[in-house]
Image 1 (cartoon, rainbow, N blue to C red):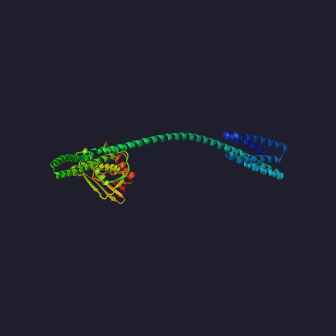
Image 2: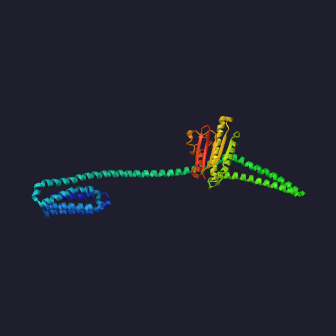
Image 3: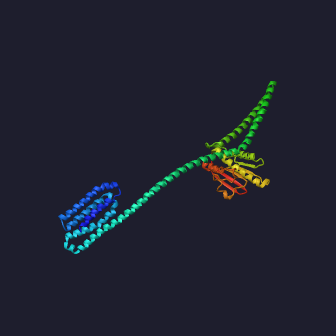
Length: 434
């Protein structure tokens, strides 16, 4: 039965050589395995010629055991451990059979059939494990083929996703640019609505400037006559009147200049820097500008304007043109709401818009209230969303309140709340930290 050990060793090396999938490893071990098989053949011939009996089995078992030990130490063969370990039972049975045969030949002769059956069984076990490993390799090849297909699909999908990502990034850039344009258009639109209000507000100081200039010219002529007459005292009195007129001209000139500067700030694309700002003056000015702007479109419209401004209010470190834009949006909406209710209810209804300021702890609170149409409960949660508007098409962009919310909350770390009851009132409450 010693021939089975040599056959097992020979087939083991041959199968391992065929099992290398990596061509580099196959090339590396091809010569070694060839020499190994040659050595097995030589040992088999030597055992047949030089020795007999139990020693033939000893040489066969040691040859197989030596090859197994060598393969165990080489990491390149670790993927084949499943098949290599299948030879262990044959080695164990062979060692036991050889030892028994050498120590007690009679005992071995009595039980030799069982020893031969054990050797055949161990050899058969090797064949069974080889068939099993072959199936496993085939399954692994199928899995590897599937993995390769999946890798191709993943690469294709990754390329598609990368392309979609690039397209989305371009879309986002386009949307951001569009958003900037829409925001700028909203600023310009709100400025356009104020044109009539600005004209009305700036006309008053200009009228004063013109009137006092004309009176001052007449006084200059009178002063010249008095000097000619020699009445110096009267000339001094007239000169004092001229001085007072010039002071009034300067005052109203500065008033007109302030209106123009405020509107220029309102129209700027960038917000600028925060600076101490008189919130009361800002609220009062934009309230009147918004009112006169609406009256320029609807001459029949009138509304009460109530201001309750806390005189002890500290100056706030804010971006004045941005807060002015917020107030303007709120006033425009308030006057629009009372105008719509007036159209529905007629003269029995008295429109009213109120702005109040107060210091509440660490916050300055600004309240803009109107007794207009109110906000329906169904749209309260949407009212601050971009592009949402309750106004008819063409009368609103839906950006005013969303921009105002961003300015207050994101730009100034403040808060904006809405209290409203449909058909009765609306209150926008702004809190800005001191």
